[in-house]
Image 1 (cartoon, helix red, strand yellow):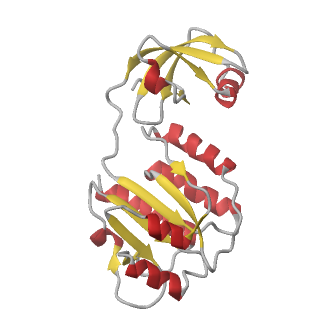
Image 2 (cartoon, one colour):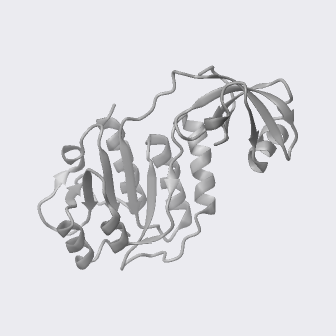
Image 3 (cartoon, one colour):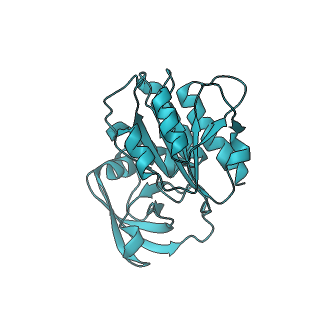
Length: 241
């Protein structure tokens, strides 16, 4: 991709085709014209969120409406060959879970599922702001796939629906555990469970283990919830790079 191009998100780009016109939503339009002060004729980059990034020329530019004509698709955008699903109990402090979301997107994550656990500190979660953080980090990091965030989901439901190749749980109870990087494998689909500050309950740990989740360690020190989540994203990125 050409350097110094401002990146905008438009899912329409996936089907518009080269020569087609895409439209930015209200927030992207305001950022384009009011914040960055771009004008008609300026070249921008447009990401479709499903792997494609394109060069485009602005044809309409106002704070409420922006349109651009796609001119070429960049073929040098790296696409991760692994799938990373992190299911994590939201922290009581909103800033900390927001920090996790931003950094996880930068390292590479496909799906974040906020977990509702027995010891959860936060039992209600609005994802609107987290979705904005995801989009911002997605554009800043140059990732090709826009990560998704699920609604706050009960622990048992996540366990029931987990269909990844490698399933792991990071809990603080005693017992034999294998370090994360010795359990996770390159080019695989993984899900990792990260509990609240009070850890998973004994029943939750038992349910996960009986459902095929492997107990893993993230190191010799006890990490905060959000730090553990970022560690998982960074370790998995290292394994695959």
